[in-house]
Image (cartoon, rainbow, N blue to C red; front, side, top):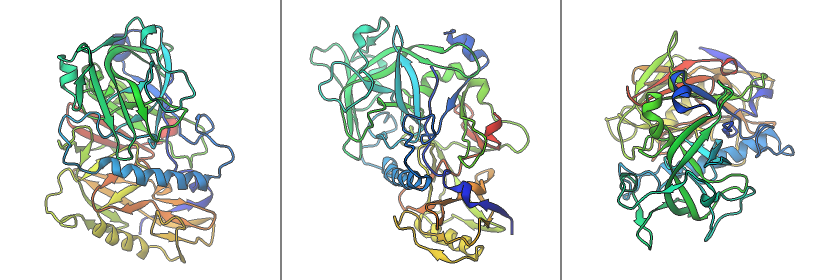
Length: 445
């Protein structure tokens, strides 16, 4: 049995949510010739505005799990979903990453949720018909010399679903709605979008970026942030708008909080985002609807030397595009019937007293008798890519007495979450239509 020692003391921090803080000019061409990178800062680390020093690691973990479960609803299919859906079903404040960027000329600093599961970049703007409480001032488009509204007949307006014309007929209006009744409505516009770069002393300025200027927004958002930055596959996401300049490539490497090295995770674009070399495996991105989400094909999971095939477990022999890879979901979800088989295989490898998760989020939990236990090796078998998961994050400690498997059953939606992606360099190539994985010590990037 392939196994690893797992330090209980280091587990607690590993499954909390992540935050991205992108530090916010040389020209775009100068920046992208060599690619550029930005820092990702864990949502619950001392560097994050969401950090609460009074919370224990376990309390943060339980909140992360709750966010993760709520987020699954974000991916549920709807009869209204279309391939061009860019803004109707993005996450609310339950997002796992935060992104610091600037908009306008002169630049105004904004903090938003950065998310691979959504497309449109939007923020709260003056004047506000209705806005949720925000600590920072609202963006005032009248103060930006580079802000321009988008016309109703423009290709940008027509590329989005749920757009309309303003009462005066001059500008394109967008509408964003959420499963939890959160929403944003406002004006579609273009303005200069500025990112900081960890690979240069100068920020990267992106002129005429499509944004949503939200004048009517409410729901489950946090006062410390303003709106969303979409990194999904749709036409108006930041990645798609940068696509030709960055060759359709971006990557990230998530540092487990179990690491004793205080080092930020990284988000890379362009040539900096190439994933190659020994240990690199690649799997096809599968075209699916909506095009916002990144779909892969998961064929099997292995526990130790026991391989469990997904074929037929979801009620269909066709597995293509059966899992979404998502940076914004904490745990990994598997089809209910298959999950039961997977959980049983894991349980067969561990000889410890079982326990119950008081919050009932996770179903396979143990009461460890020492500070280290043997954790079976777990591998995700994607088409053409066998990805061995980090043992420090396949199990998480939810309180002083319980260690739980960080996977859940969900018959509707299968998601490869961010815990399973830790200490992997994960690269997206939207030209070659692949996602690549390379085992990496993310603290050394």
